[in-house]
Length: 437
Image (cartoon, rainbow, N blue to C red; front, top):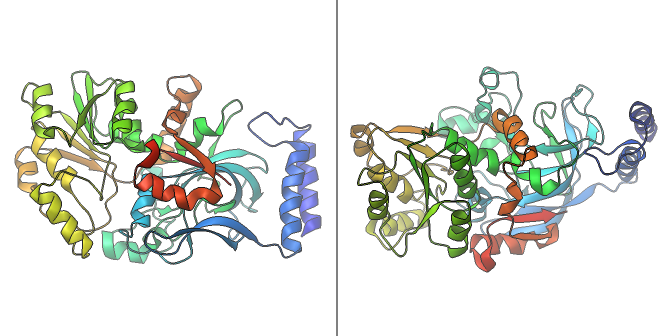
């Protein structure tokens, strides 16, 4: 094993020449060290790493787990340099997503350096720096060929379970429920990436981790939410939720030319961040969302509405909000759809509802008759990350946007369990947490 790795490493040196430590790849001697250190660890029996582990509702732990290995010729193993806690991780933390198992490795926003590649993976080389999209894609099935990467037909190894709940399979996802494959996530020191020859975004020289990390999820998620709206220059876009996805949707809608963008939330720091980008803010604790949106649109309602909240929406003490909480508490309902109801009622007739917010199962009391009679268009789904990354990377390089604006907390991976609580409770002005293994 060690001899084989040495041969690979020295071939790499011959191919690549001298080291360039400031660039987008680890060259020459650095690549040799990366290969040899990992190989030596395995031959000496050192086969564990640190990761954030789901052990039950509201129970995330920093523990040792088995080190990932190449399992398929198209795989790669990534040494994680930076990862993040996503809002959809909180659905797992709060116990609202079915299909979790004790010991699951969390996290689907991560990037790092390639330290191993499978024998059939010619797209990646040892030492390259990559962002890994949260959706695992084969790149070859009918859906992938159409650019519908989040419904890849091959990457979910538990597709039979997904079909029972959703009717069809979804793509495999990192660090999420076993309904989406049960793949170990990226809040760890190392990650095995299945179909790694397609499931990656190579990062060029000169860009920091924090500038590009969010290409793996929240930036393309907010972008897709806005693109799905088919924004016109005269449009008002209303966005429920000023968390990370909502903030990316704000900037995406403005980049796409919306006349005005309105954000609905209740957390002062999040509303202030949205206003700094040019949005109008509504604090739903202080005023009626429906009345204010009608005032801002001369009584017509916004043409485009985005739900960047999903299954754990908050509301004032309205009857429907109390009803949702009661049903969810006793697991008679998996999701709280208050935002969906509000969007249906306020959206301008013939308008569009875009739903990047995650929903996991069944919802109740949706005024579907209102949606039908108003002629509303629904667009939703997990993000087709690879459809957007080339364009978004170009926009970062050109200085149109720096996604690192969203980061409020930077901590070590070991501090992750505590930061889940801080993020979940929106304490200390927390909007986005970045972790360093």
